Length: 256
Image 1 (cartoon, rainbow, N blue to C red):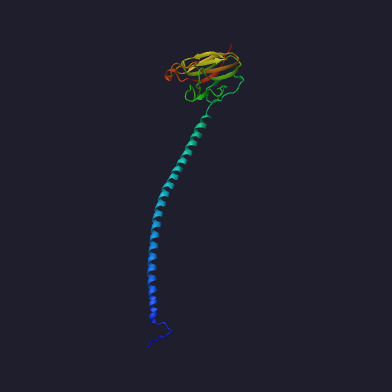
Image 2 (image 1 turned 90 degrees about the horizontal axis):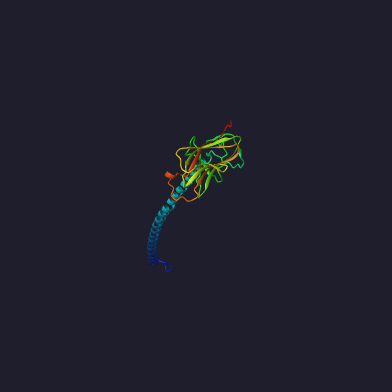
C-alpha cells in the first residue's frame, strides 16, 4: 500500500520540476554572458588608446620646448655683453674736450699733444668735425684728425679763439693725406689764409705762423673741392682726405 496520503505530494511530482529548471538556466546564462563581454571589451580599448596617445604627444611637445629654451638663453646673453662693453669704453678714453666758449681765452704759452691734458681750448664744431685718433700719432698714443666733409665746398674746421699777451708762434705737426681735385688743407688766422696744401705729403710737416699780441681766431680746415671731381678717387694716389695734427704749441716770441 502507498505511504502517501491523498493530500500529500509524493516523489514523482517533485523530481521533474527540480531538474528541468535548474539545469537549463544555470549552464547557459552563466557561460555565455561571461565569456563574451569580458574578452571583447577589454582587448579593444586597452591596446588602441594606449599606443597612440603615448607616442604622439611625447615626441611633439617635449622636444620643441627644449630647443626654444636654448635659443632664448643664447640670444640675450651675447647681445647685451657686446653693446655694454665696447660702446661705453671708447668715449671715456677720449682725451679731448670740445670747447663751447665764445670768448677769447688768454694764453701766453701751451703745448698740446692730445694725450688728455687738454691745455688748449679746441673748438671742434657742433656736431664735431674733428676727432681724437689713436691709429696715427707723432708722439704718444693720440693725435687729432678731421671727419670727412660731405658735399661740394664743404669744410671740417678745428678752431682756437685765443688772446695773446705778446707776439707768438703757433705751430702744429701735420700729416697731410689730401689731394686736389678732391680736397685741400688750409691754415687761417682771422680769416686770412697763411698756408694751403693741395697734395699729400710723406711723413709729418710743420705748419708754423707768427701772430701779433691780442685776440685771434685760428682755424685748421680741410675743404672739399667746389666741383665734383672728374675722376674717381684712388687713395694710393689721391690720399684718404684726412689730416692729422699732433704736438701743437703756442710759443711767445721775444721782441728784443
